[in-house]
Length: 518
Image 1 (cartoon, helix red, strand yellow):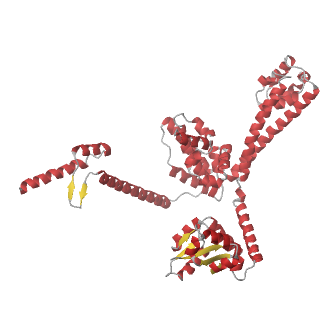
Image 2 (cartoon, one colour):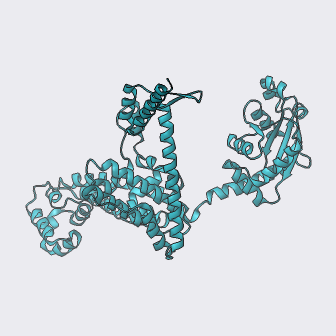
């Protein structure tokens, strides 16, 4: 019968509580749930076995951060090791709240952990009566400790990576996409509205921004004379277009419009112009933020596509955790699940489709280049996330690799290996060349890895041949050979035509020995 001990992490320190009559309690779980709030009943079952306080507030914060990530902190490891060292002869079970932490504790000190059954209710009761179970504590002191640790923990989470915050990028790209939709909608509305008065202007100036700016300047077409040609040229940036606008205004088929309508059109055109100008400023702001937060991803795939990847992932850290296969189809989740449901072909790309590399690739190579580009985006995002000093050198090198891969698909020119490109990038980023000793060590490690791979491959082939039955051993003595049809089929499948004739030779030698003995 195992004794149950429950670990409780408080803001003041770590505590271990012993639970009496564990087997009987687990059988009456509803009664335990109802009696958790009663301290007299709960105290008769649960007693404090050991308690270790945190020395400082910084130590408390470090321990809580480690526990939140499922890592056993050193203070907790020492505390539990000392506690269970006294109970070696007894069978013990430790109740914990987090399954990840329990797995880490079991791996570290070998104590069996449990997080289900009656354990959650006991932890709930300990949380409710903690200030009464530990001597020297009051409800006020326990609350102050929890409040202080809660504030410091939340402050640390909010201030995480504050100098290179990617929240601004997420908001900027969302606002930029919304502005694109709004500017296009408003530009279409101003075209349609002003075309009742001056329909010829649409064909002369098809651009939305210039059309709104020109409509705001012209107002009534009858007031447009040759004297305004220079001002119109400054707006349109083309003398021929300005001359064509003046000529079309003299011979326009549009209807006459009232002053009030012209005033409303002018106000609306001014709003569209300001929105377009703000959109350009926001694009510049996004470019600057991407340069400071994710310079390698920016130089590889561009401002807007890189920002959309970060926004869709939720943060740069989340994007860095994604594998390349996830980055490849990021943004095409609906198509992916639809394909899995209907058992059709899965999508080849998501948000990275808007990159210029996929547009330049051939139809047959779009899937290949999207997979390769997603791999490089994954590398670039990880470098941006974990590099202390941001630099765009690695992104430019990765971009050059994608260019080389496009040339390889077109002309067949073999691209450079990734290890060579990364070595050059490290030299350009740090400014210190890689010495011959480091290069020799890298070459030796690569050779060792290749030898291990070859050795494992040969062993797997041998095991596969034994399983397929080229030679079947019975009790370690006699060898039964295959028939000719089976051997021919194995030769056709494996392509190993050298092994079977040798086995046949052994059979002939055995027959000769039998004849001689007879």
